[in-house]
Length: 129
Image 1 (cartoon, rainbow, N blue to C red):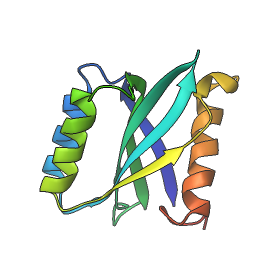
Image 2 (cartoon, one colour; image 1 turned 180 degrees about the horizontal axis):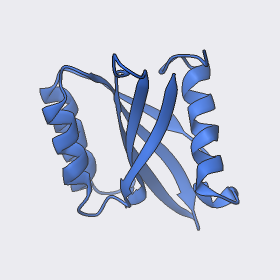
Image 3 (tube, helix red, strand yellow; image 1 turned 45 degrees about the vertical axis):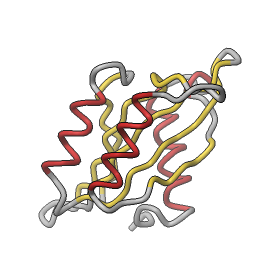
Image 4 (cartoon, one colour; image 1 turned 30 degrees about the vertical axis):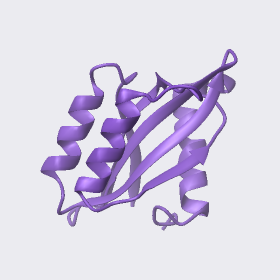
């Protein structure tokens, strides 16, 4: 099985595309994931929509808006609220994980491989076959 992150952007306006992907693929929707991290002393989040693998080809996409959502402990974040509302409307829970930032990796692809390992280890996606 091929599991791959498909980056849509940093999450400013492309999160709406992520939301549309989830809404129009409800039959394949597996998980909503929020990856929290800290970059330059600033709490950030990535939103991930995980779809079930395709029947043909066994490809599992993980659509992501990487580290563009700034988190605040003192005030609500509209993008986080929208992500929570979408998950609720589709009867899904949001899996929240604290991870290393992508800036700790020399290449973005290595970061995504690291995340796939974490998701497999926690059984959120299928193990390597």
